[in-house]
Image 1: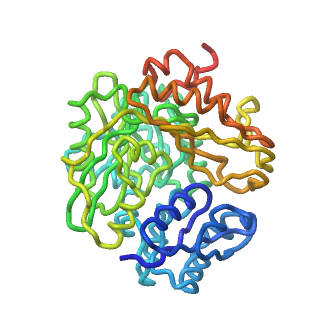
Image 2: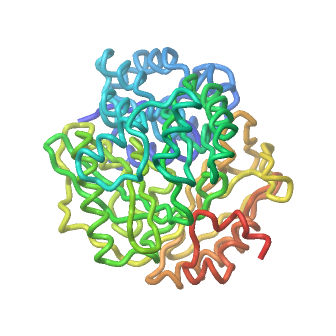
Length: 447
């Protein structure tokens, strides 16, 4: 069993991991940047070690400093959380070389699934539905143009090593292809240091449905149902819920079986997420696999009663899964709103600053995951997410009503937030009717 865990992350996910470790009797080590000296995760952990200046490249992305902190503290494991080094195969390999348990899959699996082309080919070979697209790396516009004609327009051009919506452009007609490819490739080189692209058919107006899976080192793989993550802006999720209003029990079984098949094909161990695009006719396609805990994991925890972070730690310790597929039951409905320190009226401009007043909603079926507190200063160096507001109700309608109440009660003073914007979305008739897809927010305020 893991004895002492270093959390190679910050913010609410670091706090979340610390709390799980406390319940399991595991000592925790926080790492923090100079900008995060007063952060909640650094105060809650059993030990805290400064690993450098505010910018991520000099702290949370600095593998050597994180490993040095691990050795100095005597930690025998590292939990990477999400973002930063969580899906970095080089960091996972570094842990393996140093004899430190990495709470996640091994480095080879991360490397293979991180390359969208390899991941896609693996899934196709395993019989998991994939979107028609290239089965080879595309490095120049001429090759890409020929591939696009074979695939059929519209097409989407993606960075093979990308993520977070970067290095991605859509071409609806052949005359749009060259500029779209060149722009996406330039962005990919700047963001990821690699200009390898791949091209696939662009599925119009799908829903973004992802399945949470758990897999142990004994070959046991289960899924915990789906999350609907279709409410997103610029490919960044804003609201997630489970279960999806668009997924029937029969479809859930089919997609769940495909997710388990995908994880087995990748020889996956630990918690992971299989992401699908779902069309209105219930055809679905593998999009990618995230090899880490997700921001939106609380909605799955609430409808299943399973603590995903604890399961991650147990699996990394070599334990078998504590539940079987037949033990998984979806109960009620959960919704999560990401509360960001940003101004929607000013093109979602990030708004770091000091929290002057704070009131968090409470009551039955309301959960807030956050690291902010009155007097805390949100640094300018990191993601703008300040909190996650999660609710659970017996039905989707009850969960929506609970979220309306919770958003109305939430007070964060001193900075701009997207609370009012989230409230508008939750109150939209189409959202309430479950009538939305990934394009929903592109025309939301034009209604």
